[in-house]
Image 1 (tube, rainbow, N blue to C red):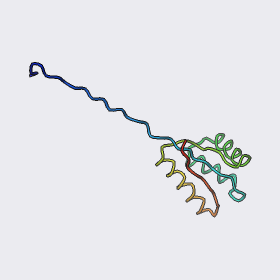
Image 2 (cartoon, rainbow, N blue to C red; image 1 turned 135 degrees about the vertical axis):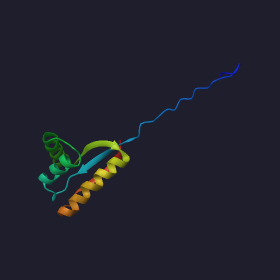
Image 3 (tube, rainbow, N blue to C red; image 1 turned 90 degrees about the horizontal axis):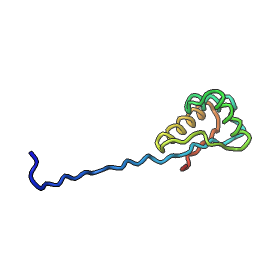
Length: 99
């Protein structure tokens, strides 16, 4: 039962989107193009055409942004890719940069 003269307050919580971080793939002379395409398809969920285009961009330009993700996801994907590369004997390099 409301009391006379009572004031009811409304509070609003503003939820902020997490910051985005770019995953950058760097070119090297040892990692095979096939391996790079496989990583892009399996870990970064690119279709075969996107993977081929990104791989060629990295090959020709020296590096390319593969995708933008929240920090934890970006780091997790990079660690997974680098771990797979080490297992395959490739000196694959990726970095995470603030978008």
